[in-house]
Length: 253
Image (cartoon, rainbow, N blue to C red; front, side, top):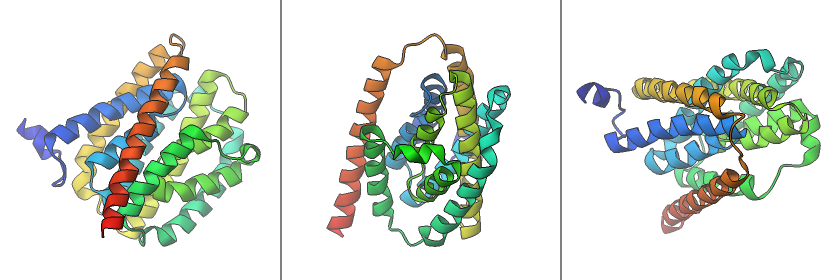
């Protein structure tokens, strides 16, 4: 138990840590088995349990590790041709978002996360964006500096490619690895202190990798129609709580 407690940053209790490790596993499983949703679900839970200023940077590193593991496991299925233009767009988006990220109030981040999750569930980005990887990379990476889980945005581009399921998972994981890598570099450059969170982030990445392996086993064995309805319901409920919590602080202040 003492070893586990030593992994935790000062602002995180053991109960919250266990929940986050479990959700990292579940989030990766969901993303592999159903194509999307795990990152947004993990972000929503992290936003409830973590300090707001650490939310987006820590989530970015954890998702970098999880998506990298997924990209390696499914590498032979990846559609590599779209990657260079996505990298260019992502680099520009992170640079723009990073120039203003440090000025955003914590309660705005919390409320913004909730609104973005609801938007991702109830609506879709413009379809024409799916034909332009450079624009998709730019907008998704810019938004990711504030809202974290923009995998749903990139997924709209990936789905429009009409790829087989394994190729979709591989390509989406590769694109998200690029986005989270650039975002993590940006937050490091902006001065976020990752040091106290590093052991716990590694633990979350490890449980995420286990989730990826489990998701790979069920990828072709589970119908996702009913589950997607349940997932959307959970996301909206958590998002509403985030918005309420954030606005209570913002309007109350």
